[in-house]
Length: 419
Image (cartoon, rainbow, N blue to C red; front, side, top):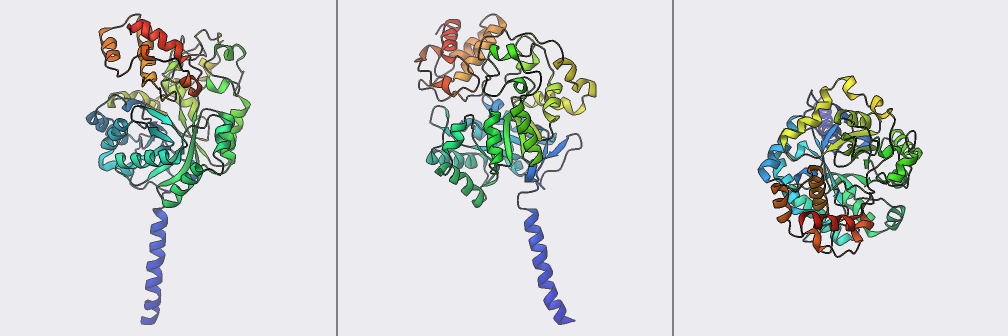
């Protein structure tokens, strides 16, 4: 009997150790306890359980560390355990790191590889040295040694994807996974054709994609903010998008949704929406979550009190979630000017140092109000660089996913604000 125990006990200990390690391989977020008030889905083949409403980082631009802590704490306490961090701004990253505090293990983080802070502004890059510095900076400021989903940052053109094949950039991403610094590989894109090609490569488990009922009706290759696009609006979802969603569902690739409200909440306003009907937040979330491949709908907020506006979906009635009635109304042709800014910052960096997204946002607020209030004037004055400093190079327009006429808008902002 003693001989049998001598043999069996070490074997049992080994089996237990293996089982314990397998439970901690990044497949399950065991630290986070599911909130009964949140709806959860499995994030594709990662096995991670995520709340269907997640946090974007867009609201962390202009808040302090204390507000950041309140915001992240409130989100986690209400079951929001998924967050996207694309912004390379050191202040934003530090605020989020402080906000997470000792609850890092409760938040599943989608961090981007290819975001670089050049000292003045964010820029998209495939330069490996910049990518390394940018990613290590993210780890440092979040006080962590890993990112759950390492997102290859913004692939909107097929040539962008083709250019990284066999490149040091792609090798770096794969090395990060081997080293355990990222647990899973993902990609972000606004282009269905490109996203589908990357999905079919077998490399990614998660795709961050711009998805909403307006974008879905735009024929692939055309801008969803060009009025001409909606003169011949598709009666249903673009076939390439249908193929993308079906492929992801069939191959267990999760989609995390950006621009669920059209960017800048445009789908909530009939006059601003290219659909020319107003949807509610609940309807927008219900629309994106109706697709089996979608795991998370991301929202950007700048304080804890606003989180409830997005969480209302969880207690909304079926009638409140019903988007079909609104979408089936006769849709007028889009009348808005070409290229509405969604403040996504993909236009950066500006050689003159202008925060283009911020200037555009202040301009839109002034136009909506019909005047430049004292608060707007002060906010504009406090910007380090102003619209009048635009050198009209046009580099920003080449990077904009939504065809915003940035140079024209900088001229307009300079006139509206006086400099």
